[in-house]
Structure formats: C-alpha cells, structure tokens
Length: 149
Image (cartoon, rainbow, N blue to C red; front, side, top):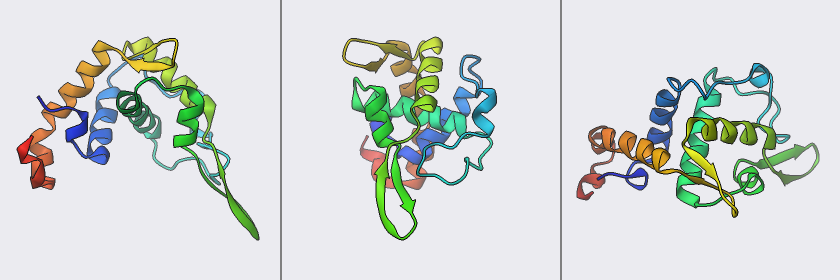
C-alpha cells in the first residue's frame, strides 16, 4: 500500500486539494479572498483555490508530524518579514487561517482533537492513503525511483 510518505509533497498536496473541493465541510470563508497568510506577506495569495491547497497541506502536516497544535503549525507556515533597511526577522503564519482549516477538517472527520494536539483520524488516514495509492502511477512517471515502493 502506498502512503503519504511515498509521494512527492507538491504533487500530493495538489491532488488532495482537488479532492477536498468536493467536501462540503471544507469551504473558504468570505474573508479568505482578502486575508494574508501572515504578517510576513505583503499581499493575499493570488491562487483562487489557495484555501484548499492550505487545507491539504495542513492535513498532510498533521499526518506526518503527529499530534500538533496551532502554535507549531504557525511556525511551520511562517517566514521572514521584510523590515526595510533592518535585517529580516522570522514571523509566524496566521493562526486564524490554521484554526479555521483545522476546524473544517474536524467537521469533515479527517482530524480529531486530543490532549496533546490534533491528530489524523482513521477516516483521514484512509482518505490520504487512498489518494496516495491512486497517485502511484502518476508519481512513477515523474520520479522513477519510487518503483521500489
């Protein structure tokens, strides 16, 4: 069985984002068209489907990193802030976006809240592994080194 670890992340996230579009619980809020993804960004994302891409990325991150909280996810999605003539400094990403995405993934049944943080449920693990298994042939064309899996 092919898992999330066997497929390149960029290909996998795009495919999961396409699958999440058909999930009624995962929908961008009204303010998503105007929101920046963190204080280190100057403009909102240009991709109209960025909410689904972020949701897919967050779901994969929770799958890979185990129990995670909002603060740890904010650090992962942060970046360097341009401070003019001063040196850049690291700033964490938007917590509101991550919180809303995780709440939507919880409503869809893919993520659950535990004492240590959020984890992927059995349904979420099955969903991600099925997407990875379906992508195996496509991934072999791009990266022939995956044939041993």
